[in-house]
Image 1 (cartoon, rainbow, N blue to C red):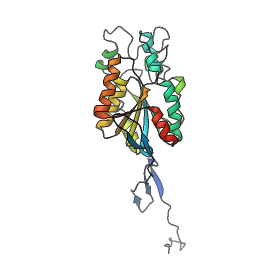
Image 2: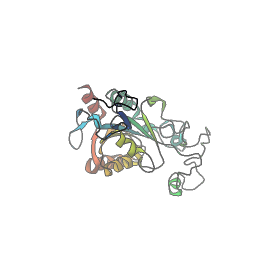
Image 3: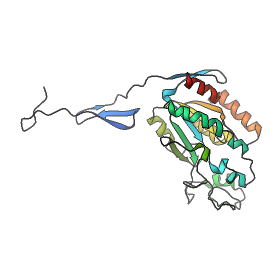
Image 4: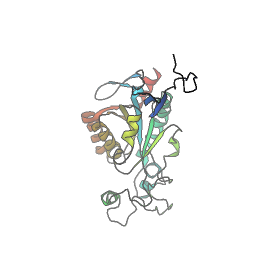
Length: 268
C-alpha cells in the first residue's frame, strides 16, 4: 500500500526518469533510488568480407567516423588545390560514402564527422603544427587567407572547413572539430563514443596516411575495434603511402573492408 502524505492522502510513487547523455548510457532515477543498470541492446551481427580475414561486427555498437571530407581538402577551389595539390584522389571517397552513409543511418549506426576546425585566433595550434603546412612562414598555411577567395584555411564555421556539398551531414549526425592529425587529442570524441555505447569504429575520409591513420591508431590504442573502409578512404600522398597505410591497418590495427561488403550485410 502507498504511504499517506501529511494531509492523509495517498501519494503516488514517483516514476523513474531516464538521466543520461544517450539512450545507451543512462541511469533511471527518482528521489529515492538511482538505478545504474544500462538498458540492454540486442546484437546486430554483420558478417563482413575483409582483410586480412573476414570478421563479424555488431552494428548495434558500431559508429562510422568520416574524417576531413572538407572543401579545403577536396574542393577544386579549396586550400590544397590552391597550393598545387591534385585533389582528384581526395574526391574519390565521395561517391562510395554517398551510398554507404544513408544505409548506415537507416540501420541506426551513428555517423560522426571529424574535421579540422581551427579557432580564428589559432590559439589551438602549436608552432610545430603550423610549420608542417607553412615551413617558410610566408606561405599559405592553417588560418591564412587564400589569395583567390580570401577564405581562411580550415577555420571553424567557414566555407573552407565545411564538408563538401555532396556529403552534407544529416541532422542526426555528430560533428567534432579537431586540431591535430588525430581526432582524439584535445577533442570530446572519446567521450562521445563511450556515451553512445560504441565499441567498433568504421573509418573513411582523407588523408588515409595522415589524419585517418592517426585517428584509427589512437582508437585502437583506446581499445576500440577498428576497420578502415577502403574505397571510402583516400590520400593525395604518393601511392607508397597508401600501400603502407593499408599494410599497417591489416598488420597492426584491425581490418580493411570494402563498402559493398557492409552494404551487403545491411541488406541481409
